[in-house]
Length: 51
Image 1: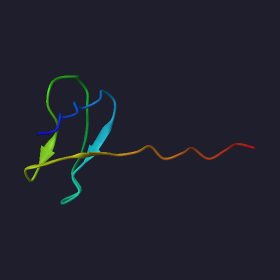
Image 2: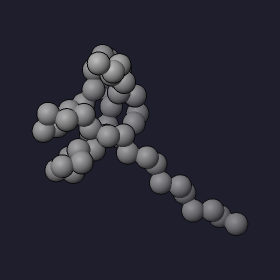
Image 3: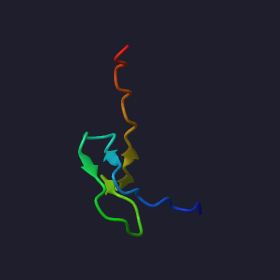
C-alpha cells in the first residue's frame, strides 16, 4: 500500500468526477475525498506579465 499524501494548507483541491472544489484551511492527517476517490490539487494559473 502506498503512503497517503496529506493535504497542504492554502491549496485548492477538486473532484475530477463532479468538479466540487475545496480549499485546505487547517493541516491534519488524511486527504480530501469525493465519490470515494482522493481529490486532486489544482495548480495555480500564472499571472500575466506587466511588461
